[in-house]
Length: 548
Image 1 (tube, rainbow, N blue to C red):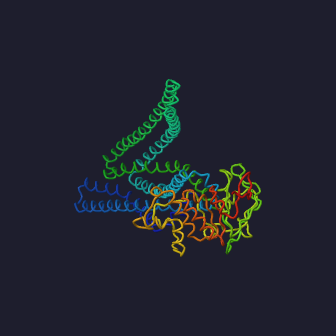
Image 2 (cartoon, helix red, strand yellow):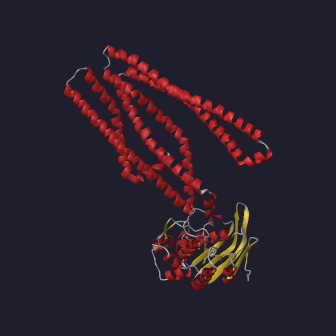
Image 3 (cartoon, helix red, strand yellow):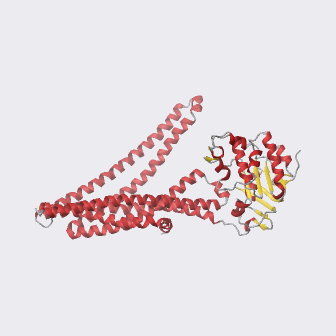
């Protein structure tokens, strides 16, 4: 029920599609039942040599019913597509929103490609299962009841026999299906093993040639193939047997129907038209029964999908606090310790970042420079081992870090994104503000000259692949400086800049530092020595060594 409740919540967000879909589905179901009955009545008219007007009336009614069925089925499939797509999108959007709020440590541990596939597959699985509950269980149950009622009214005896045959069919079907599922798993395992052997030989061709191990590896491959072949043949044999069982049961049902029904037609107890109605309804009963089986098979798979989605949604429960300062005057690291996967990164760090000061953060790779920045940004708050980060006078856990990052913090990472969009969009995103420092920043970064070289200027469309690393970095720096935030953090900001642009950048940072906290991660001595304080990360501590 949790799965259905969860999915229905999203489906009902699109009531303009969901309600018409439900109503039309009911009508389509009734028309599908009514169609064979109409055909049977028309045949009775033909066999009884009744009035032509009655025949034409029946044909017109059948045409109208059939036309309505086709038209409404088309409309319904269109609505169903919209419901599925919109519902999956809404679930995906909520999951992404939760991931945005989650601890960065959790998010970093997940594979983005796998996560993307998982979200789409799991969301679709939950929605499809819920829709199937409505279409294949609820509607089919009503359809089965109506169909059986019509069949009983025509011939109780024949209907009872057909029901017994249907039950026997599904008992046998389930027995074979269970064996088939076991063999399918075995076949998949052996197939994976075989292709792994093929991949192994392709990977180690050089090694095999050097050591003359062709015979050894060929024997390994042959052994794996024979095992894969044996289980595959067995699997296909059972699969073909299942198809044979399907056809055999239907054939037996038709024989019984013709024997008993034919007799009743001959003795006048059953009309030819109603005989045809019964023969038309039997495959429908088989189909309706199969729907129940499919739902049972889909449930376990859907439950796994739902549990994964539920887990991802819980990631977003790590909520921010309520404190929102008017300004950020200082950021204090108070006895801060941090471990990553049982590896110590920091141990009892104490330091205070003050407004009006530029800081160079240095250290060898793996000393935790980027990690420290992520902690200051509140991205790893829930993963702090001991100690705290104090913003002004409040613990970072009491601060609304989402709001603070939006209003006060700006970060230039080494790999900041470049969108397939205009230069303008890449610089401003949705910030439409064009302030009076734009030309100054563009000139400082030599972006003005770059824009003049583009046919469409700032409206030129760029991609990550059609601009240089230097231009990417300039765009990212411009994006950050134009925001005029109080805390600026740069990670190797000049790694792709020329010396002249680096000098202009250093001078500009010096000119704006008065009301800002500026932290620069760098290995460039020119940048490092331009900062007021040099913080060295080593041996899990912060020291203030000056590098000259």
